[in-house]
Image 1: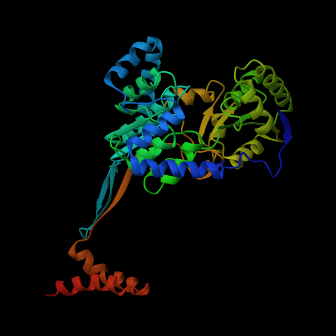
Image 2: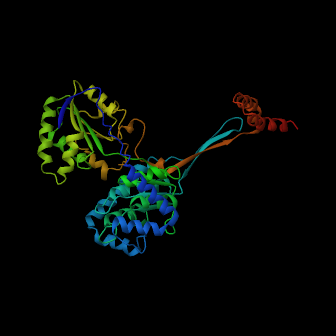
Image 3: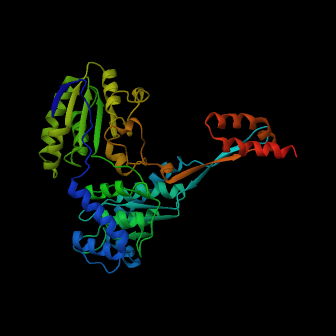
Length: 426
């Protein structure tokens, strides 16, 4: 990895992949075809892109039961415990409606309502991502969403979904599952087909075609975010162990060739030791080609003068994941302003959050932690304002409201107030 001094250009931002003109055109064509031809279009695209001709899209009860039979019992218990942790964490985020009343009888409040339906896209094909299922379904369930739909591309050989995905879905409480992937799945979720009814919001990661499709349907439905490649920043001092820090940097580098892994430390000795360890461990990784490209192009070790400078550097970066591996990590927590998820101490490596601890692993990337938050229960709720004015309240404030309306040139607004004031005198 490159060992550098801090400079004004330090950033984790990478170019947002907006796709090629051909990719954008292809996605628009897929969406339009699904809108016009429903199931037929979804079936044709699934055959074209996944090599599977499906008679039906919905996962059957037999397939769901079979998934439990085919999943190792120990892994089932891990999924169950992870689900319990994630649910418990998100239950603490739950907000409820509220109302206040003043001496004039005015009632003001906020009504919190869960979304009617959400769709979760789970990447798949050759891989299984049960953690993605848990992190998206469980906050929606806690929020009170009644209808949760999962779509995921089928295995090209079997035409089925991975057992771990199906088990995670059922443990999280999602029963409506479809073997559909790609842009056609996003179109089906947004606009509906004969088989798949539309939803109000779509969440979950996917490839460039899925990301482009989510952008295209946004506005007709809500989406969570367009996530960029994964990233980690680590603040470490001389107390950190080089092999552990190197392993944590590589845990993100193996995600994607565009993933970003950065160490910020005031210790030149640690910087050199971590650099050596990264090269050593990289050579033994199964995904060393991907991780190697990530480290070469987007990895760096920055040496600062002080720990405070390291903290300020990380606040400038606003990373998706931040590890604080110092002698007293709790002392630094209050100084961190911008990070998607913060991991404190050497026994809290980032994968703890990815799979098991409880906080959501769907996090803001590309520096957007400056203004956005992890996926949470409120993402699956909406809020309505409540206004009840008593007769006395309108008497006391009506003239002020009418004056404000005329200030903006809206005479009908003013008259809507004054007609009530006039009628009160009759």
